[in-house]
Image (cartoon, one colour):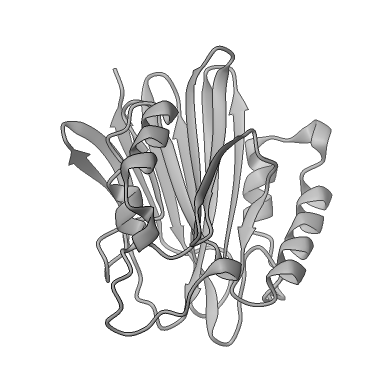
Length: 247
């Protein structure tokens, strides 16, 4: 129940992420400056697990994880599933996508429920890179290089919802006019104040968009902007911004 897009320009890139969850799930802590094995990073914190769904570190690596609902096993109380958010947080000290790939290979992802993981950095010969991994409970596949956006997930009518969000993306973000402000408008799209299971800013009786995040990675700093979506509706809520100096 999430949506992810990205943009890259001269020497920098942005990542946008709508986090959709059950209404019963508590709010997360806004992004905090944290450290893992000497590497500083910014990430919000999911209160039940202590994990996260999106992080960016001082090496310029950004990682995001989405549930792959179509391949999930049922969550059973007391089951030994490893938190996907903790899996992502455990990669926060990776300084390149190659390191992420090596660590995923060594990690026991089989203990996690199904997921899609995206990694971003500027370490390739041509600079900006996007890699995608998929864990379908049978095997981990990837990295797939340069996947197509938007990346979406939904626990309800996934095929229908993803198709609707892709249509909205094509309408709001034309291929020849992709820029951060259009992407931000896409992530706030609620069908003119009529949100549904299909809209990017999503609302159902049992689930909704909890937050909209924007990560900006530049040579001198990383900035994590975090907007909470109000329970009562609307597209503007509490806003937080935290920066990490890379120099």
